[in-house]
Length: 143
Ligand code: FES
Image (cartoon, rainbow, N blue to C red; front, side, top):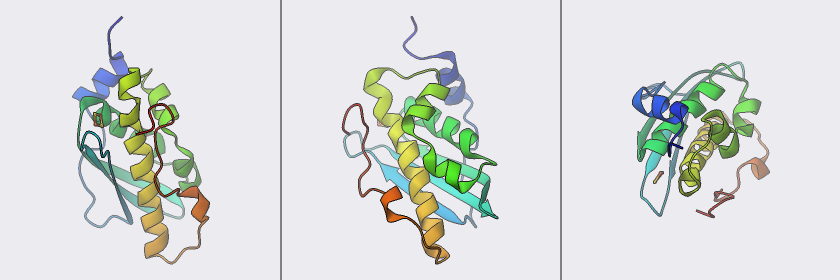
């Protein structure tokens, strides 16, 4: 069996929603201290819905594929759903990642959460702080 699914290869080769949004309503950046890879997510939000999302990822192929898939999963969705996006959901949508690459998908979950938090803080919106743990980590590898 190939190490990477066709979906991973597709999103790695043709990533969706690459770039930045200069007037983003929320920006989140997550980094992996072990490999040094960084993912940045930009959100446009209107009426509680993610109307546009872009990403910049300086990282491995799995991180790029995860960013691409994660942006597709939250685009056009309510913020409440974007906040519930887990790295597991991203991995499943990609038809899986090799076990040693699961932590790469955690960056997408983290960066999206931080972008939503940034939006809440910039706009003085009250939010449930328990939704944003200090240092979310991968349930599989602990990174
Ligand atoms: Fe660093 Fe994949 S190896 S995010």
